Image (cartoon, rainbow, N blue to C red; front, side, top):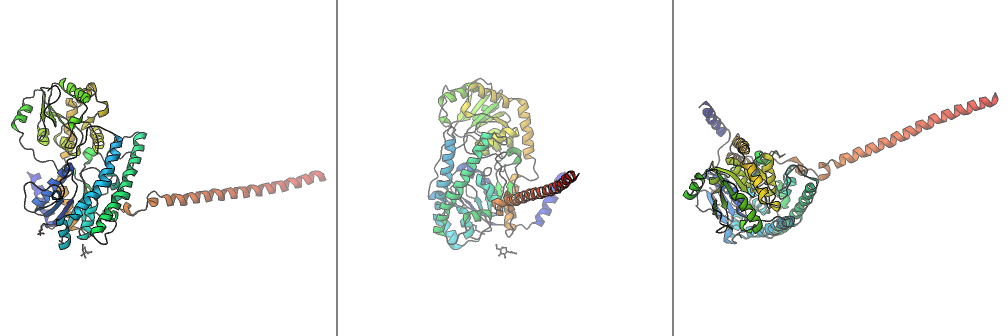
Amino acid sequence: MIFKLKIIAFIAISNSLTEVLTLNILAIFPLAVKSHFFVFAPYLNELANRGHNVTVISFYPQIKSSANYHDIDLSENLMPIEVNHPVSKSLFTVFLSLTIVHAIVGPFTCRILMEDENVQKLRETQVKFDLAIVEQFNSDCGLALAHVLKTPVIGMTSHTPMPWHYSRFGIPYNPSYIPFDFLEGGTHTTLFQRIRRIILYNYVNFVNHYITQVLEQNVVDEFFNDIPPLSELAQNIKLVLIYQHFMLSGSAILPPNIIEVGGYHVAKPNPLPDDLQRFIDESEHGVIYISFGSLLKPSTIPLEILKEIISALSELPQRVIWKWNKKSLPGNPKNIYLSKWLPQNDILTHPKVLVFYSHCGLLGTTEAIYNGVPVLGMPIYGDQPTNAAAIEQSGLGVQLNFDLLTKDYLLEKLKTVLDPKFRERVKLLSKAWHDRPIKAMDSAVFWTEFAARHHNLTFRSPTINVPLYQYFCLDVLFVLFLLFVGIIIGLKYLFSFLVKGIRNKYSKNLSISEKNVKVD
Ligand SMILES: *[C@@H]1O[C@H](CO)[C@@H](O)[C@H](O)[C@H]1NC(C)=O
Ligand SMILES: *[C@@H]1O[C@H](CO)[C@@H](O)[C@H](O)[C@H]1NC(C)=O
């Protein structure tokens, strides 16, 4: 009770310290990828619920319209394509998809954004916004729009940092221990993994800098005059809300204006549909939940591997719920409940759900730690390898290599995460995940309002303005090296001078004594 009173008093004080203001906010999310927008939607809705006037440019207009939330719907110009990724791993695909997403899709959506009638109207009427929220992924065109509208900007991601975010926001990058999206290894790497990281890191940065930004700069220059380089606008971003949390992704070195808000997307659970509720309730030994997300098509799993998975599952007493995109599985196993769509978070909330067998998307991973459900991770592409490594290192689960999948291998991994001791530890982890000074959503909203309140100030890391040769102290090392060489040469001369002096004196004495000898 006293505790509660204290909190109320604290809230009252903090409210009186910070003026309450309603903001006119422009949110620019021109990316046609559902799993990204799923992260942003609850936050944008929350801003509107708290009284801010939010205008959202995206491909995903709201289904139920609410006051204060206004859509600028880009899908009127182009219906987003539902991309499906086969369940197979290849480094070549990683290179190819990174190149396509950044060098082609980025500039392409940039043009769709710029050409949109309603976006052009914003510019013509010069609507005054207090703040722009711009997704930090494969396009920086939103920054040009915010610049034209003279609006301060905060950034937002639905994942851990992309390779160019490190230099852009002054986050230290070191391949030896900093996990790299798209590649395996987590924080404990082999030499081979570090070599791959360095190559891909530089490749992606090259594509971003010399292809994406150059093409996009051309597009924005068609529509606006005097736009500064997009890279410069990017560096002026006030702060970035990043969708990760150290309890899962591990301790990272982040400047204070890069703020971890991981976890806010998880909604209050809804009741399960009757048949699912019964299926779980009536399971004697609990349930294994399987989902490979919205982008991977599970039916593309090669038949021989699929058979291994099914026969492993049939050896366990648990029931199985599987998000599966076809009507049936080979052999029609009786203990498996299939559905094309499943209320994932509501399922994970059920205490009888013991394991989440997952591709390690960030949303599902977050829901797993939120609900304290151990994860068996099978990463395929995108940021899944990083997430899988994080899951293993945090103790939330274990991962398996899809390329090596056999029945026995899968059974061994499943038994590891089904162990009650393992689950106990995951429950501890989940407890710590919820134990925060302020809820993730409150934190995201607070820093958004903070950026608007203090729009005249900059919080960016000084690293951004330090040239590379200074960052690595190359100039200092060079001067010290010269000094060292100078001292060595100096000492050498001094030494040989002294030696000469002594020798001269000695040989003089010697010749005198020789003379003496002769005289004698
Ligand atoms: C809220 O946003 C809408 C759409 O952008 C705009 O028409 C309206 O003027 C805004 N209201 C305020 C109070 O800024
Ligand atoms: C703060 O920024 C606004 C424009 O964004 C400007 O009009 C104002 O003069 C600035 N205030 C100070 C104290 O620099």
